[in-house]
Length: 181
Ligand code: 5GP
Image (cartoon, rainbow, N blue to C red; front, side):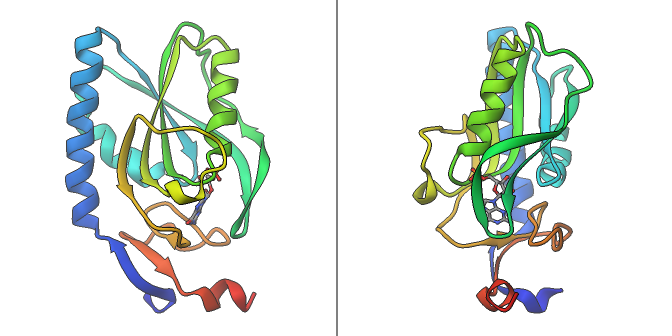
């Protein structure tokens, strides 16, 4: 599997260390605001990051998952489709959305809009990665693990054609993998 990786951008150790820092910051911010958030993971990419960061959030959180699709292969395609909705109502809840990467910003904009429409009191975002150079929608995650350059990455939840999510690091996929498709 490693032979499709050009180079490693973020190691597993770096992700764990950063998740501890973000978890501590989130704990402090919500605690001082007197709020207990519902932590919502966007399937499937956020799963490894959510599993790591939730251990470092020292609050009585509940977790839930949503599955939306907006990405086909290596290019983003506008509107999101809801494949799996949340189990519980979000009315009046403060949501902490967990995402793998903010790229164009379209997915988060749509999901945030949807959650607020469903009555969420507030929606904050924590994303493992941020690719600010690709943004077409003005949206900023409240907590970001790592800013990365405009390269297609896989691992730690991020896929190419549903593969490589299980790599324990963030790596740049060799362009020939998607060019020779
Ligand atoms: P956005 O709506 O911000 O353009 O896209 C967000 C989604 O696009 C992410 O949740 C992720 O699934 C996908 N995505 C964006 N950039 C990358 C990337 O470099 N690698 C992979 N594997 N997925 C990406």
